[in-house]
Length: 74
Image 1: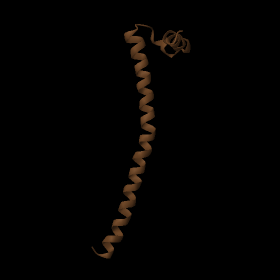
Image 2 (image 1 turned 180 degrees about the vertical axis):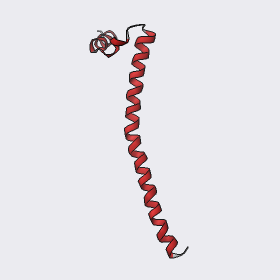
Image 3 (image 1 turned 30 degrees about the horizontal axis):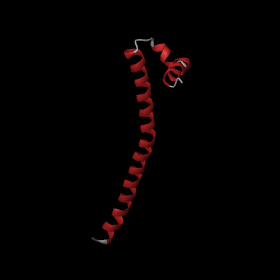
Image 4 (image 1 turned 60 degrees about the vertical axis):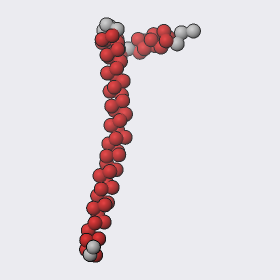
């Protein structure tokens, strides 16, 4: 390898690191967003489709408080 080829290869490695860090940052934001969407989709599917209830009730705190009390009742 000549000296100019070695100098040209160094910036390419830095660009790859920048690209990898961008993907890592995207994963840090993408994974939690997808988890929240999966949670919301599961709540709607379970409450509306399986429970045959109104979709507006899914987002009320009293609904989930009641579910919690049913599950963890003494």
